[in-house]
Image (cartoon, rainbow, N blue to C red; front, side, top):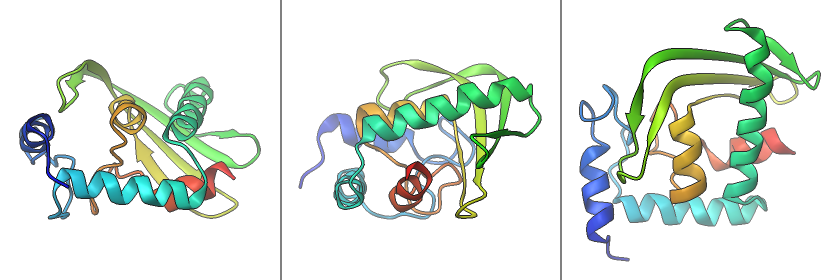
Length: 149
């Protein structure tokens, strides 16, 4: 499917050094539309919605903030560390500014670890963008499904 002008513009802003040093694409060379469509198919295959996954990540972040920057165990399963930084990051689609932070979650049941931010949650829920393969903040649909279930 052809990318819209909005997607082409967002894709350019996702490259390394524009919004963040590493960017949002990792080593993925697919078009933005192809990345999103593949992740939409994967999420459907695993039986989770983008909204449910985003809500779960928000829950883990909120629970992890009680650790005040130190690891905290949530639901006897997830080790969550929330780090904050000064400043805000713009969404590549230019539809908001988001607190600069990072949330690291390790699932003791599956040994899966993910890292994400407020911007990651926004892009997941609103744009269905999990970030490109190889991106440090990529929200792999299979890993999300295993974390949630």
